[in-house]
Image (cartoon, rainbow, N blue to C red; front, side, top):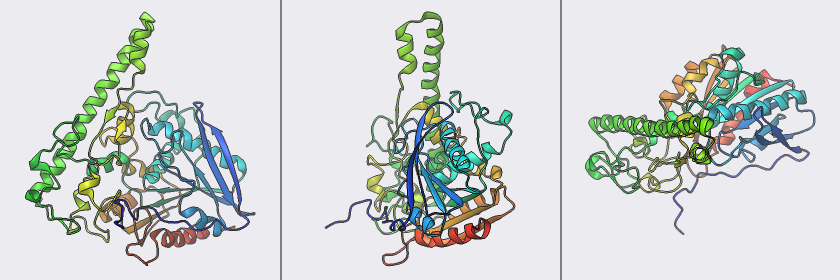
Length: 409
């Protein structure tokens, strides 16, 4: 049987230790949204580790049983729209994080530590940064102008931060991934030949052989990636403005047609977002990563598929989450605001956080106590090679050791 394109992305988790007490909780955010979380702990656990991602369900994250077995309580929580980033506003997601941190504080844990894996890393860095500011300096609106009242929110500051394979933020990540050879935003098969990353004329080699792109092509490609992001930014702003004008009219006219126009989401469809040249040219920013992307072993195919980042988004979500030019959720921008003891675990086969990224992110963290550790593994915690230990299990050892040294008991 032929392996599916995305084979190997998910890894099996260990069993939850016997005697673990598991409870599910529904929480209400400051702005009235409902979020849910699961708390797991062996009796006597005094430090709780929070695992979240802005758009993924982390209930069964591979590190949950590993950390519970080491004596830590683990809180896994979703945002208000788990597994659906159609309208993911990162500023609203901070209110979701806050609801969980208030709940854990009120449960009486002696220490609360955030653990952000992949996009969860920037989510938590953003939370730490805003929680560390006096209320009057916090954000009051998303990049689209939508009001988000972080100033009035109770944002309990965590006691520690763990980052596992964090990428630089969804906007910064997408600018590396987006395919600039799309000739027509309404046609997923349209291609500008001179920018096609999967053309032999531009240096692409049949997989799984590593491609070899010229410096000139790489420069033109990355310039064109930034230009495509800017074009989508302009379209998103235009659609936000149309809705805002309709809201303004409605205040005067009270005409249902104007109200409908203000509510219509004008969803953006973003084709082909799995095309980082480093996925297929392993000589670029080299590390131990295998050939392929975060979504599969054939980026020349998955780039054209349904699964991918930012495929369907509202203009507001684009500006808040996916635009490198407007998103507040940038790891490097937020990292100086992370002032609690911090552990950064780099996976040496990562295809989203490369060695230079890791160095820059660690250097940007604002804590005095920062450790940077490396373990073999792929971005989602898989093994580098069949039969080897998973990156997640190796990371769990490092994280458990670090936590025990700083939060004993």
